[in-house]
Length: 251
Image (cartoon, rainbow, N blue to C red; front, side):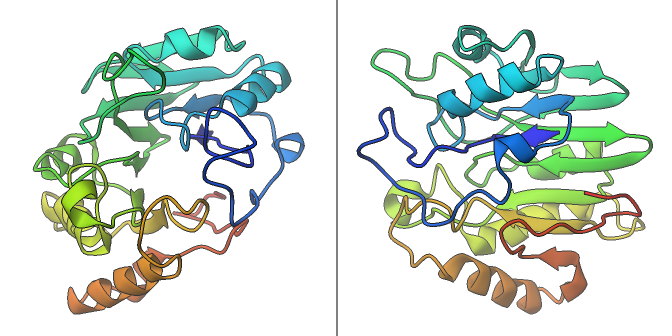
């Protein structure tokens, strides 16, 4: 399974200008194992990478692409074959994995005239009794406790921690580290008896998109995590390319 695969050098319509990578992908497309499912959260260039979609579609034609409403029109023309579009709270099952599109606070825009013509979302996932959550791109909103109630309890959650300054502009689009920890607390609130899920901090350290220092998101996330008295072994700030077993299975 892949989430928002971006392999291009720049997150921009062309590759000679725009935000450039400060960190290479942890794995080359050619090094990917057989892929069954690709999740796409929305159509922004740092999440929907046209060259990567084309290459993955050629290399893994059997894969199913699960996307929010309206996004299939983009990737169908780039070679993706099996596409499932979901509205918020709709579900799809692919090879035993149940995916639920979950609400997010964001927007979509890729070219002139298509602003908010396609949806944006996160995903709740369930496979063989294990549950995971991929938040996608989002500002903070009150539905995370509902997501936890309906799709949890989770074993593994992927929550964005970067691209948040200046707040007057980014507050409605991207959570900051403190809000990321608040999302985690919302997700687990309805299942106090369940073991705490592992949180992977995502959406930082790859492209310089906003004003905060590149190394700040992990530091602030850990500080807030400690203030909230959460178990430190439940927070994963991964090195690029790092792997880790989650819930007894390889990830």
